[in-house]
Image (tube, rainbow, N blue to C red; front, side, top):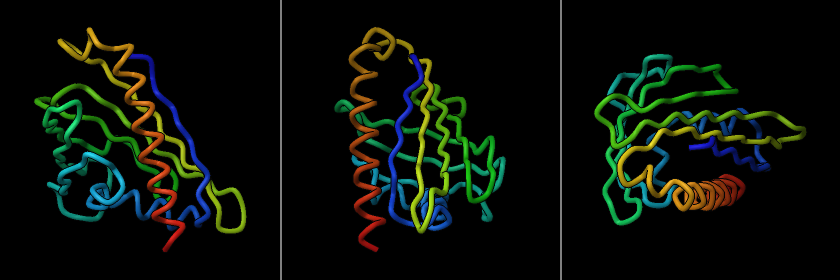
Amino acid sequence: MKPVRVSIEIHRSAADVFSYLDDVTNNTEWLKGMRSCRWTTDPPVRVGSTYEQVAHFLGKEIRTCFEVVAREPGRLVTITSTEGSSFPLTVTREVQPIADHRCLVVESVESDPSGFYRLAQPVLRALVVRNINRDYRSLKALLERR
């Protein structure tokens, strides 16, 4: 599937936003459909850290295990699904300071779906874009209220 890229400006410091995003146990607070998310390795978060999550998408339970494959503390994290997950997925989140407690968050999602998901790629991509934008609006509202 063609990569999906979304961005949003958040009126919080880049350090605060990255810290929140860096702890995947927060995912259930801002990602709609996320049922659970837990680390499977001990802190601190680093390249090689792993976690598993359970989400609900298109009426199906999606179980995915992720590994942190790139990380620049305070700025960037890339995760990729591991073998045995529902489908191959790579997510990169970058937090860029703008000024006076504001930052830009950019997420890029790449996937190579198979089976039903491959057949439904055009519709699936539109749903993914819509859902990511919705989730980041939720993140923005949540963090700006704090």
